[in-house]
Length: 579
Image 1 (tube, rainbow, N blue to C red):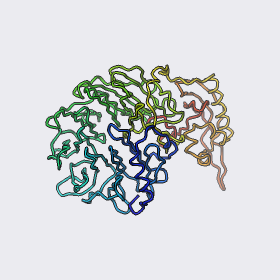
Image 2: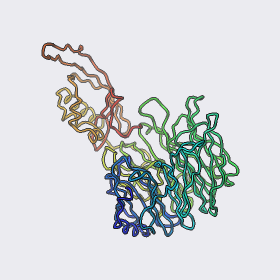
Image 3: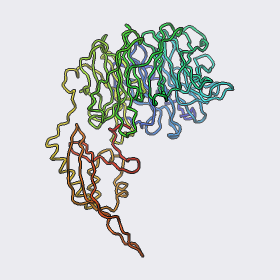
Image 4: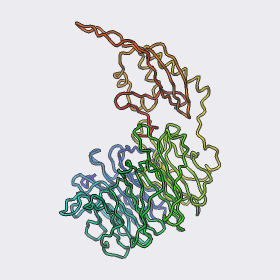
């Protein structure tokens, strides 16, 4: 969306969007289409109802919505190559959009509601990348952060850059990822990592106090072995926190989530680690804190394994002293659902003091829904846990792992839900979802689909499927496939992959049904018929008896065969399994 595409008509409507503060949450975002590869962001002014959501839609338009307005288009990207970072910030009287663009020039652009046009704020030619953030100072000056790839002699290639309204841009710390936190009074702390001569790294930071004109000199948090992509920072009741994941090769590539805390604005640091399973690859973290030093952290990860279907792992822990010490990690999700994905665990404070919601995207019913728990003492105990939110709309409801998804309203907290349009799960709409404690009174802790005559119906479906396979009725067999396969794979493509094999003499063995999944043992005769080609006759292998186990899925009130091939790295389309 370069500035050459900016229209003054669109901007005049943008002004109206940015200054509005509505009374009730709206649901116009339900019909948008956002590809899973595109970006969106959401922001709310502290202590205010003013909020905004921005995103790139399926036609590469840069769109935004403030409450009680129509979606507004700000410009069009030339295609997926140019999709990039996007940020939004809202204060009491101002709002701003920040994005990185390659067209017409590679730069970081900013638009505020009191400016006539967007401006290029990369005045030092940082060669910006896609990770960026926008916020406002207490006196409502914008300040922007982004990661740039600029070769500076004697310095790392990747750095975090900063610019505040009315000042020139500057390089802050070396870093490939953006980790920063805002202080309650408007100060900002930016973290980075600096390689050492010994092949290790130092986590470093620079602090810019709210009343300062510049960042203080760089200081060291701690030394650490090289770490991965989980580099995050937050402010919990005045305590600075930065976390990262470390892989220790000497103990079998164990993955450890570490944490550094400072209660004295970076003068001293306490380095510890989160309790939890070392053999989990953690890929998201969410934090909630109150003013009394209670902190609840939810980690989402995946068991390190060579198996394709790797069970999800979920760890929740609580601190009563701002993060200095932690309870044992525990998994709120019952292990019986480990066959399915869970994603994006979130902790969201409720409407009243002490109220806390824990929620996540859960695939135990083979399509995503929101599950969670509710506490009235900020996670010390839970009124309910591992239950489906009963007031969510029917459909495919998910959450963004690395997005700030919650916002406040007089009626309580909301989260921005990602509602997928089809079983391809390639695009979704954004829907505000109201969190209420009413679901705590329900009795839905155990997911068990109601399948009348489950085994008999399954045996009938398996027999009919293999009968159609024997008759090479590919249209019929295609109709038995799971909805994921049929949503992604056209019938013509399926037929083109059918081989010249005859099947007969089916015998169905043991059947095991677990929730919405059935495992069916069977044996069948498989034979490749003789084929005559011009000048020769192909002699196929001898017929043989084949034993296998199929997986069938209960979806849309029927059993469906989960399409799976042993070749091509186990081609499958089902989305409920861990990737």
